Image 1 (cartoon, rainbow, N blue to C red):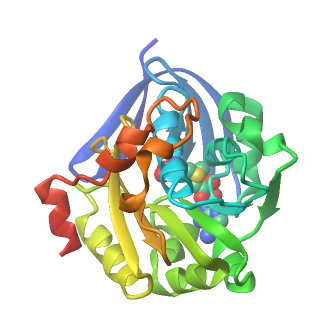
Image 2: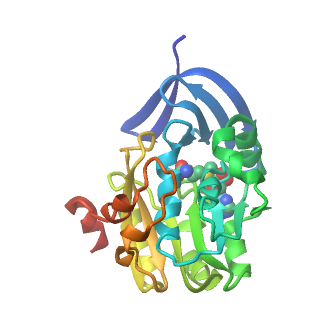
Length: 275
Ligand code: SAM
């Protein structure tokens, strides 16, 4: 069989994967949802023809968007995830015993339903009694819930359509307001090769609101360029001051105490984005 999926990153670059099967297609009011089976990465979730996650490499992204922030806080109890309808971030947050409740605010119920049906290894945490699922716009949710969450995770699609507002200064201000006194947030902040202006803008916006701002990296093979950035804004705790010797083992496959420190070591071309 010679069936390929191609993601058009820009007019000069496409990313391709050989498919063995299309499992699901649906058009919702927000986007086109597809689940396909790929030869290289196993099952893959696509939204508007953009790769969101695959069974083979999802652990990198989901472990890094959650544990770096959670292990920076002494005792995180309430966690909010905006987006993240595949459930991978919920599954990782639930590894932390101090977490009493994780609230997932996803705008598109279709993503959650597709993940539950076709990606059980990623979505398994969504049925946990500590997980609460809210179908709503994350932008509205942070505006309406003040001083509520110890950590907010912005597990969003790229900055187009309903996710566009999740990258703006007004949103980060509302995130600040929705966090408890010494809370922090982590957001996926795209590729240091292809989204340089956007990352600089995010850093500038977050710096104007949060006293501690850090950028960290992970390698996600199915994202354009592989290398991916995450931005942290914190009211008080600095991830670089964590005693990594005290980080409890979590059974993770990418994140580790050593990597908690190492992921903040930026190559000069990435460091430039912080200026
Ligand atoms: N790991 C992914 C990536 O970086 O490609 C993100 C995956 S997750 C599936 C992204 C989710 O964010 C989508 O399901 C989308 O529906 C949701 N989303 C986009 N904008 C949103 C908003 N304003 N509020 C809540 N969820 C939103």
